Length: 457
Image (cartoon, rainbow, N blue to C red):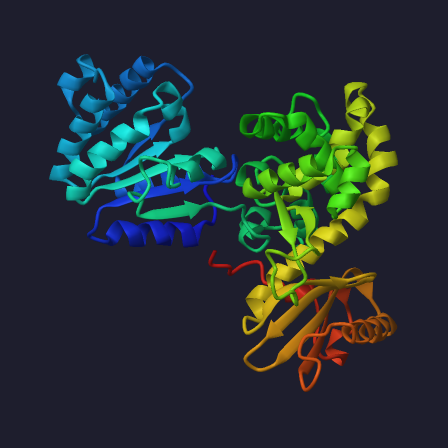
């Protein structure tokens, strides 16, 4: 099933329509939908798709020869497979010089594993053959560190790649196509657990409620959603045990390095190093108050798990594996998950509200803000017009009295935000799960304002 990714398809179509040769590096974490995107584009543009595997060089070339022979209807190649990468690229160079055929190498890192000199060989053929044609080549992979290394200055392909695209998980609004027929509230709860990776979104049964899906698909040892976090991290990381401890700590709400150090018992240097790696892999993100002028060097950075599925897994599965190993699934749900689930969803709803604000009020640059014990869910800054917006997000149903109380609290906290203190124009907003009498107020929104049907991303 292929859903959404409209913006990415349009970008690839735009690049393909240009007359210049293209060597595109496309990458992203596993399960994010890279292969489906390539297949969709290849289907429309009659491209040649080749998938790397963890196998020998000879086996890889033999299999590629069969697939290339089938694609070009070459009966001679069918019985005379290409014997090396030079023959492989020479053959493709001749074909691509005669007609424009999109060429996709998926899981390119597996191809490099079979021959470490492959990037250097490709560089030679790009410089002397493909760059002199209208070639359109995409190198795709799931190993973020290796794929970014291909574009680095130490790589033979440095300076050759024409575009670099990272495929991120779908936002809540992009993922809405997976939730057709569901209420907005149910869509929020499902996305809070699964996040935006298409492979995970397809695992839940939309005809069942959230807890039954969690029991059936995340808390069973044989299930894909139970095992995949460990698989993905072990594929990418050399010392997963310490990374697991750090991610578990962050999932519990420990956002400062000092808190993570105290919780895990790991040295501060180790925690800082591992958080940096997890940030590079886009599993963890570092947030800084939007009013900080030097965000990169700010000491106020806090760490959060970016992906909802990873967050849920480390929060509720990782620390409770003994329940699962003993088959005590109902006990786990009743005692460990149910009591905390609504609060967990509330925290994820803040991120969805943040996405909605970015779409709805584009004149503002949106971010988070905190200082000491004061915290605001979302703050928007419009420097051109010296405007600032303060937003509180509530995963609950609000009465008129609740709304008045929230506005009062919000205005009180806004006084601690020092940005353009003199003469700034202030806006105050509330985003709730439900606000029945929101028409009585200005800038009160709820799930009814979330349009889940027309996102172009």
